[in-house]
Image (cartoon, rainbow, N blue to C red; front, side):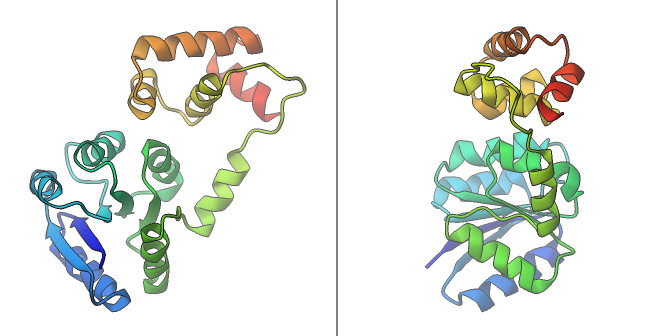
Length: 203
């Protein structure tokens, strides 16, 4: 039996999503809340298998929201269910730790597939986002820059448009450490700014 928490401030979406889940698995235990405050209480009381949340709840950034859930439940898989532009937010959510992103406007079958996929430990994004992410993967550099794994991770996040504070939150390291990695990347790749970095790794 799966334990699922739905955090959405629109009651209609809570009901419709709950109905979809019950048809997928009638034994699922579903908890509905309309705010992160109520979500905190639920997360403290129950170890949920899946947390489905709308990232457009007022007062929180994408990273803040996913980090908030992670603080109370490291084992819960997080799936974003939102009307937010997937071309803008899907990759940010995945980088921040979400396991899936599905638009509220998606067909019922797509929503079912997303829930089933994430519950089974896999990632889910739409075909549109999948193509976008593939197109954004940098091609191989003409030479080996000898970046350490953490530098490569920082480089990827920088190219995704995250700032120093956001990168420190995603990687759970100090902002000064991010700055050090960033400086090393620029030095090793012989670039002076993010624009030059993007041009070098994507050409």
